[in-house]
Figure 1 (cartoon, rainbow, N blue to C red):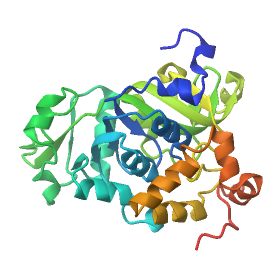
Figure 2: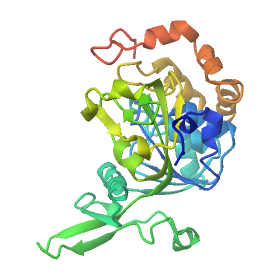
Figure 3: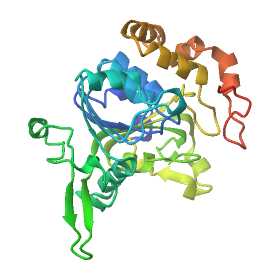
Length: 322
């Protein structure tokens, strides 16, 4: 934990040092909403390797990390950008080509696993996935499980409840080395406020040994003391704060901006082919010096004006999505 308030406020490059090779990580957001993309791009530039990723509903954040060769193993429910792709093209290629190891759970099951880690309990009982093959098929080999003590020794367990006799599933808790989320507002001490749905960000944040928060704005603590019930994560759980306006692009950040349908279509078109995928990375990730240059690359002030959200609605009602 940082010893001083100012120690928490840092640059993207400084914050990526908290994510070593081989780290177990999770990213906040949900499909086309509020992924910490500026941080993802910086991880890619820094060439992190052998990451173990946990997710309930990741989108292009995970897809790009896999395509960049950053990810070795994945535990998740699904990976997609909603209407733009049923499944991420790089995730598909990696699974089909045996480039990553992966294990699947239900969406609710993954959120419950994060919640168990947040509560500090070793497992959580549930009925989710009963009646499906998810409870029958393991994705990781025994060799893989023995190779890393952070991986659960088995995917799950089914038992008869000692109180009712009903069959239930026990899911292993998740405790990440690092979780990274993107929020609308963080105060200078680290208190986090997320407007709109928080999806599984609260559980993911609280199950992490270290928490990194990118945000649209950094404000003084006094501003978040009004309506404190709207504050999601307390300051003492946060290790790093990075102010990155539009830091979730091409995804939406409720009340601030909408997702970018043009860019998402461009990504999924380019990511289907190895050569065009490399060109995309060279143009939008490796070929820019910082996030400001990236925003200029994707269309600058004119593009951001089109994506700007209506404060009352939370999204851009005139945005052309088709």
